[in-house]
Figure 1: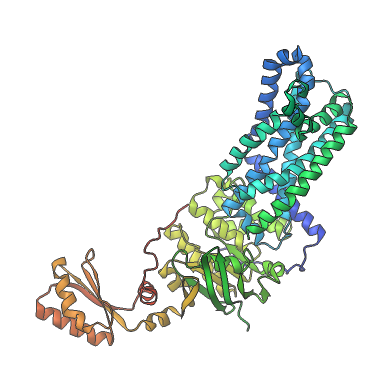
Figure 2 (figure 1 turned 60 degrees about the vertical axis):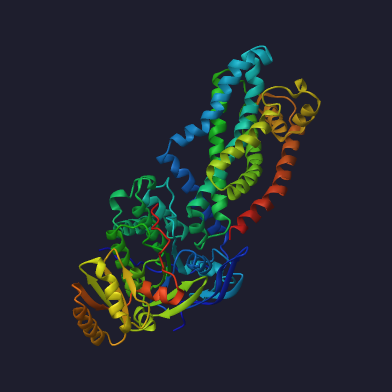
Amino acid sequence: MTAITSPRVKAPSVRVGPLSTLRQTMTLAWRSLVQIKHNPMELLELSLQPIMFVLLFVFVFGGAIAGSTENYIQFALPGIIVQNAVFATLTTAIGLNTDIAKGVFDRLRSLPIARTAPLAGRVIADLTKQVWSIAIVLGLGMLLGFRLNNGPAGVLGATALLLVVALAVSWVSVLIGVIASEPEKVQIFAFVLLMPLTFTSNVFVPSATMPGALRAWAEINPVSVLADAVRGLLSGGPVATPILQSLLWAAAITVVFAPLAIRALRRKT
Amino acid sequence: MPPAITAEGLVKKYGDTVALDGMDLSVPEGTVFGLLGPNGAGKTTTVRILTTLLRPDAGRAAVAGFDVVADADRLRAHIGVSGQYAAVDDHLTGAENLEMVGRLYHLGAKRSRRRARELLERFDLTDAADRPVQGYSGGMRRRLDLAGALVADPPVLFLDEPTTGLDPRARTTLWDVVAELVAGGTTVLLTTQYLEEADRLAETIAVVDHGRVIALGTADQLKDRIGGDRIQVTVESAVDLETVRRTLAPLAIGDVQTDAVASQVTIPVVNGAAALTAALGRLAAEGVVVRDAGLRRPTLDEVFLTLTGHHTVEHTKESVR
């Protein structure tokens, strides 16, 4: 029989130090990422929706909207990357919701680890998945004729900006993850809020074609400004204004939703 | 030696519902303490407060010398918790689940792995160690969850209904583990709805109802508290039950219980042996055919019934995940 006891772990100091916090965060990020090894389908699921959108929109609507599929993919691909990034933040909501429902969240909270580590670990893992799905959509787009006019620097810049905005939107996702009663509710939320949000933007068609009020909204919609910024960074064009607007949106979303999400999390106690 | 766990006047309300209504506890180091009560009695709320997952509205509590609110950060290094629901990650293997906990305790990758293997072996999970938990049975999950609570060998262990949903073999394994841990100096607080479990494991039992302790003592003390022994008479034919009841009622010091299904009558008495002789004499005089008659100590369920007026597990089902 194996001994059940092992040397007692020394009590850490009252506050968890920054290095420990980082290690714990990385352990918990590892936890979310190592799952992919056992469930490779998850990566495919992450990529399936954007691949469908790219193929359907480019080939079905492309000719009608932009005259040719080549012209259309150059316009729509950056927007589809943005749309996908917004949807992908829901991974955080679903994961968090599952952890809370299953008691894993409580188990982690009963451990002598930094209070921020479980959330930070999850978000880091989810941002890693974001990079993966950006790469998939971009790769597919390039196969279909999308041209990178700003080279690798543009790709890096676009990825960085997408991650910054995704991080901000993650606070919305955390809030949903905490208040939703079950993961299915998270999906319903995605459909009723994120679908209209991403479609009332310039992702698929230029906002100039839309009627008055809708057009006004589409021009300030965060999805639109981020799509403009990513378009500029990947295929060339003005970038300063849309990047600034995107960052302002990210800041605004964080200022509103981070306190709400943190409060909701605290309420769980 | 100071107690490993203390609680004084803990109160917790959820809206109008009072989950805890002045809970007091004192658990000496190196002992097993059982919180016995039905669903909704406040057992889980107590455990959640003692493990820093919930703040009490009033009262105070300390575990391993650390206040559950003011010293929560330090307290967490001294406890292990295994909850009512198996808190394991479905998408990780059993080994990975335990390694994760080890790493979070900064055991290091190598030691975490070794510790995970030790615990998997101890809980008969070696064969399933490298399979995702998704495919585990309910009992396997519970065992893995308990193993997770033991990774850092905490001096104080909280087990919230640890054997709910376990098969008899897994239950025995768990009981052995608890006995072994306590022999090694660990303090264990466990909650249970099972009288048998509290009786078997816990040195001290607190009977909990409506958010407070209504009785406290060893199993024997609690049984003594409601007085005397029980004469249990089983008859051949259920038609005799009423005769038995009527004949023996004068000997009873409390409510006579009739169980028609088991053709059994239970009578609380004092001076057990003499009362049993008297009872058999009376039944023989009435011409009742007795299949079995004996003397036994009251069960904890009877203790509970006497103290609260209701059974412990009357309306609760064993939940199996």
